Image 1 (cartoon, protein in one colour):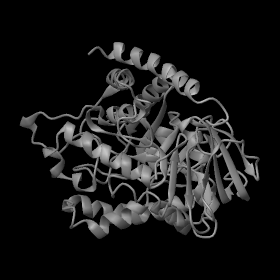
Image 2: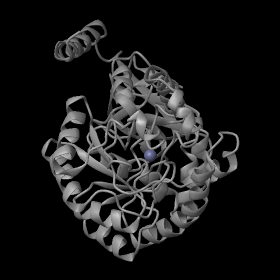
Image 3: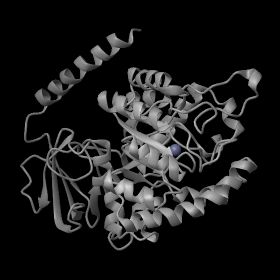
Length: 428
Ligand SMILES: [Zn+2]
């Protein structure tokens, strides 16, 4: 079927569906009221007691303390729980699993990876993450998954998806596992300005919401060094400039200090990982208001489970060196006031455990509310979705979670989300 015809049909189908719903159930019975003992105002950091959130369709219409509930509204009473905005993870790979690290990925087909994505989308949503930015997937599996979630075919978070990440030949996001005679090159490989522009535009053509660039070497890749930069400033400027002109943000995988600086100078919107960030990089990121998306909990999980997932030895050796250094450097960046958005790199460890990153952020010097902001207001700003997600406010999607306990005292309560609503529908 013709892709354009399909998207035109989708564009028409949605307004018709909305009309049908509002005609069938006139106000006020289409209003849902969610009540909870407490609600966290993530902007001020204050707890609102006797919270009431009014929802019509997918969106919040009002939120506050002791609001009047319209007659006929459906009431969901969460008792003593605390309501928070749905959480946002800015760095996932939903179509991947930990055991895909190393050579086992070679035997995994594109359809199989897509179904892995359907499983992980559900797990992520159930864990309270109602929005993710998926930064790197082979063969556009992430774009297919995003569309299936948006069409209501499978449960999952809202997704901003990148498609295949851009990489130099032999870079972190190229396949370096095959001997030359197999002639294997990853889909996102682009060398030089012309090829980089072509792949950026091709990714956008096939549905990318965000452009992902592998700017330095990585940990879970063979034959490269996380400390070295991979793209030149000229190439990075071309990619980021084109992404921005076409209305997309750009995210750079960057461990090494030089690659971080080059990406920031090229106008990148976020640095992913940032392991070897130095004082100069910290200063530049603050000046350019570039977001840092640390992904640190994975270090604990990966080293504990390396044997179970048969992680190849060269990759484990790199992980043991890079990950402790990353914690020290990211702690310095946090302390210096680099803007931080929440990320996990889930796929390196099992999806659904995303909230374990909060505890690391607090360990590295954040207060619980600062850590919670990274996954709510900060993340929505980096996504450019402040009109949609990140707070419990009128006009936003009714994406909310509820927990027992006090997340402002113990951020680990977020590892045990009891109730999840996405777009006004209870999904847990
Ligand atoms: Zn990643």
